[in-house]
Amino acid sequence: MTKRALICGISGQDGSYLAKLLLGRGYEVWGSSRDAELTSFSNLHHLEVFDSVRLVSLNLRDTGSAIGLLRRIRPNEVFSLAGQSSVGLSFEQPVETIESIALGTLTLLEAIRLSDLDIRFYNAGSTECFGDTGNGIANEETPFHPRSPYAVAKASAYWAVANYREAYGMFACTGILSNHDSPLRPRRFVTRKIIHAVASLAIGKASKLSLGNLEIERDWGWAPDYVEAIHMMLEQPLAKDYIIATGQSHSLTEFVETAFSLVGKDWHAYVTSDQDLMRPTDIVKNKVDPSMAASSLGWRAKNGMSQVISMMLESEMELLRREQSAK
Image (cartoon, rainbow, N blue to C red; front, side, top):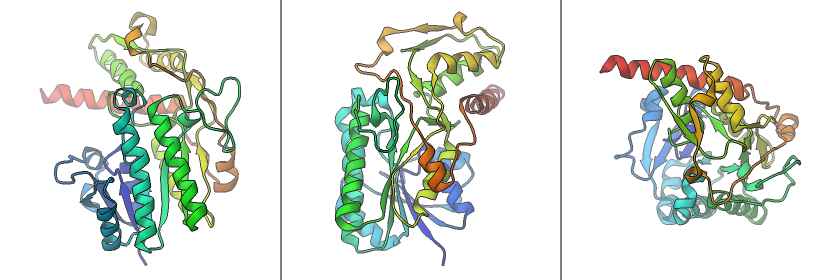
């Protein structure tokens, strides 16, 4: 029988890549958005899968409508990828961030429980929950120390999933994902912001770049790699939570330097540090160990930071050239 999946948050980066992956594996894919009639679903169009998915509206603060949708679709798998996705924006919109992530996840868990359907559930977690790891390396047993409203919301959702798994025997798991990027990242994210500035410079448009703390360290991976791990987690006999990461952390300075070097430019001439872009609390070092995913899932990241930068830059330059030629 054809498997059926519901991706909540299908319009985002991970949701769109996951939809493409599942369609390629023979799934019937449904995707939800708050208002499917008004959402552009530009990422699905970009990946050329828009016409292959079924789109529905879903308010993740309405348990009743969620139950009704589950009973109508009867999915085998539900992926919770919706919610506010920017750490920086979460300081400006803390209530919206916590409601959309923590309460949204809880709504889906309760809807699955009350629907009496055999559904496997995936929750999108984040290594931001670990906070600053200092000189240590976090694994699945490391206590959380969230340092942003975004991380607080993700930590709350993580524990809700663990509780429903233990209390009700649900197949529910969380992927604790490190930073992962692609050309589908919005330009408000620092990685896409950097890539856009470098690509603009490469095609002859003078570009200055203002950034916050250049000393932060993150584990940057490739989003299409990560959605493979997401799907693999639901294919296991037992539900477990896994860290999904490359296992290699780099400073933002390294990210910037690598990007500018690809176009033969010295980043010092174009980049400034702006105090207004500093966060109230930030994580300097965030190092994690993805070895359990390697040993239990057989998953390893195919692409590290340098490959991610190269692929994003190539795509961004092509996009800018098309925009120029269209004028």
